[in-house]
Image (cartoon, rainbow, N blue to C red; front, side, top):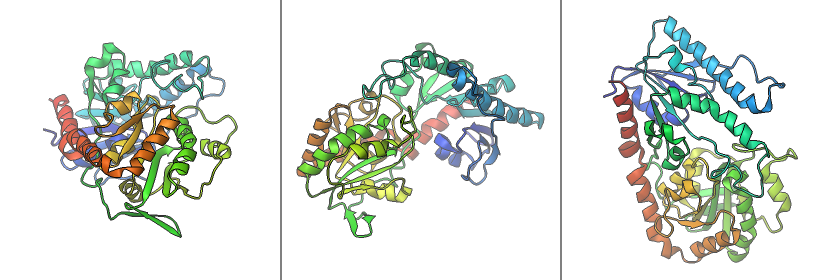
Length: 405
């Protein structure tokens, strides 16, 4: 049982994936959190902020730049850990995200303190995101760069006592020699808050408010980019609009780049795709980033929710959509296939087949009653396997508790 322990979390963007866990643990434990500065706060958490003391040098070898960046992050965190040690503060458990090298030196400073490291993604040249999409071919030297990029992750995998991954597919990307110490537990979905609501409405413009009675196609991504199939969605959009003349399309996402390379011309992927688009956009509502409550209502009015992704990290938004009883039409890629069974709790299409996407969306809009049970099954999947309070938090806390005995 986790009670009266000193727990130390590490994540550059406080609280990151540890938000719900920290909120629960701080009630009965002393919780420290090392992060870069931001405005987020959780009452009771002792927040310790850092900044790397310099940027990566421009003359560093291209293969080594991510490694140097990771080392700079790890060094900055290590200096805070050393300060804690000098102050006589020894945590009972350290929990950190390994993705930016922040846990790199934790065991060198506290060798006897158990370390749980969150591993979000281990890179491969083939079989996952890299070289997946012919429209965006990889750098000819990407294999060399990824081999070096994985070196810090390998060091963290070696030094950590236990690893944590949110999905089985992400766990499977880790080298087999380390998979035995990897635990698969998702961060969890608040299914009480994220549920269906037929009374929800969304004002998409000063003159138009959509509801669950409307025909609404939704697409959500943190950023509108190839990794989340934005270009495929845009290829399907003319057909969706033409075949469904009474439907509206609501798009949520910013114009930055979360994953992969930035556009060479300096424009956003959204601008690139809109420049190529031929058709009437009057029924397309690109909302940018929205407040979480608006995001929830967008899911609640959705008639068909499109989720496309490379073989990469699974988005929270897909699980949140399922929790809201959305009919998810997803890409038949491994992260999605781990959760969605075609025709049972969602629909799957080939990532690259925009015509199949048009057909699936049109059928969902034309025959909504035929998908009622699939929507119910989607929510039940999340309730049974990803519920925050009944499934994920108890599993996370049990894992942490087992490491402090």
